[in-house]
Length: 169
Image (cartoon, rainbow, N blue to C red; front, side, top):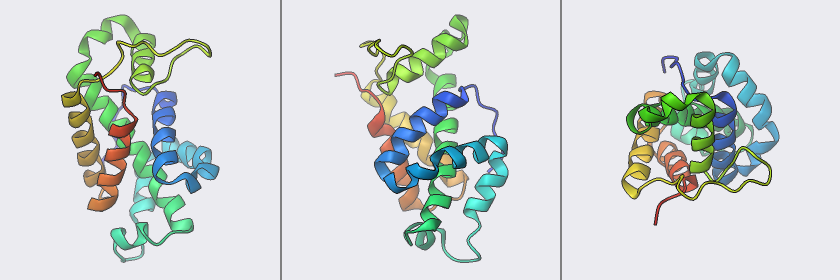
């Protein structure tokens, strides 16, 4: 996967990815900080290392359990969140650019039930339409497939990201 310049703050990417990884692979949370730091130091190398499985199938390696899952899933989840949210901002939130980085960061955190202040509730208007959630899911899936993650794992992660989003009712 080619390195992609992100308009999304690293802290927001980590925060949203933490939600996704804790849902689909809670056993990885112990090494999440180390894996996310490695990813942000060198995304392309980290993804390349995660994708390199000695000639075996990515599908079978991801399902093998143990240390392989810890090494494999988190970098792909970070790339997915970074790519999908960057694309999402470009497609749906161009008007937030005038508000600056803080407004975008606050808005993204609100989309995933987070807020900037410790006691501040997420803005009830910060929610996605069902169509936007589906768009986000598809963009996340495409990002993971470009990163050469297997189909079933790409769907699992993309579904977890979509499931973490707040949806307008």
